[in-house]
Amino acid sequence: MEPLKKIEVNFTPGTIEFPSADRLKLYVNETLEKTKGLVATDDSIKATKASRTEVNKLEKSIADVRKRYKKAWNEPFSAFESSLKELEGDCKAASQELKETIDSFENQQKEERRKVVQGLIDEMAPNYGVSADKIEIIDKWLLKSTAKKTILEEIAESMKTLQRLNAEKAQVEKLCLKHGLPAERYIDLLQRGMTYIEVEQVIEGDLRKQEEVADLFKQRKAAEVAAQKVGMVDVGDGKLIDTETGELKHELQRVSLELQGTKEQIDDIARYIVKSGVKIVSSSERETVIE
Image 1 (cartoon, rainbow, N blue to C red):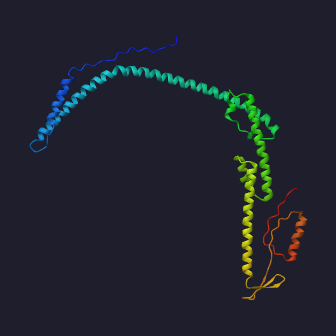
Image 2 (cartoon, rainbow, N blue to C red):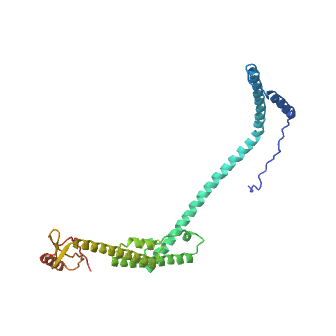
Image 3 (cartoon, rainbow, N blue to C red):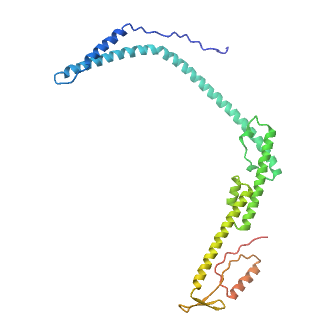
C-alpha cells in the first residue's frame, strides 16, 4: 500500500436558520418588561409568583430548543471525532511498542559498550598502580559517537588523577601520624577537591589551634599551682608547709611517657619505677608492635 500523503475530509460548514429570532427576542423583552418594578405584598404576591412562573417556563422552552439542536448539530462531529481518536490510540500503542523495542536494543548496545570500556579499565589499571573498581565509568564513554581514542585518553586522565590522589592520601596519613591527628577528616577534604597544599595548610592551622589550647591549659595549671602555693613556705627538698594549718605538702611533677622496647626492658623500667617510689597515676595496656 502506498503511503497516505493526505487525510481527506469532506466538510461543509452547517447552517441553522432561525426565522423567528427577532420575534422571540421581542417577545422575551416584552415579557420581562412586565416584571420590572413588581413588589411582593399581600395583594400582589400571587401575581408576582405567577410572573416568575411564566418567566421560568419561557427560559426552559428556550433552553430546550437550544439543547435539542445542539445535540443534533454535535452528533456528526462526535462520530467523526470518535473514529479518529480510535485510530490515534492505535498509533500511540504501536509507537510505544516500537519505543520499547528501540530502548531495549539501545540498552543492550550500551551494556556491550560498558563491558568493552570496563575491559580497557581493567587492562590499564595495573600500569598506573590503581584499583580498577575505583574508576567510575562516565556516560560519555558509553556513547556510540565517542571515539575509542577519546575514551582511552580520558580513562588515562582519570587514573592519573586517582594515582595522584592516592599519593597525596599517603602523604596526609604520614603527616597526621607524625602529629597524632586522625587522618579521616583531611582525606575527606582531599576527596572533595582540595589540593594537598590546601589540606596541609588546614592541618597546620589545626596544629596551631592545638598548641594554643595546650598553652592555655599550661597557663591555667601554672596559675592554679601558684594560687595553691600562696600561704605556703618552701622549706626545700620539695617540701611545703601550709602556714594556716601547719600541714606538710610535697611539690611533685607529673609526666606522661610512651615507651617502646623489649618485654625485658619494659619490665626492668617498671621495677625501677616501683623501687624508686615514683607513683604511677595511670597506665595503658601493653601493645605489641613489629618493626
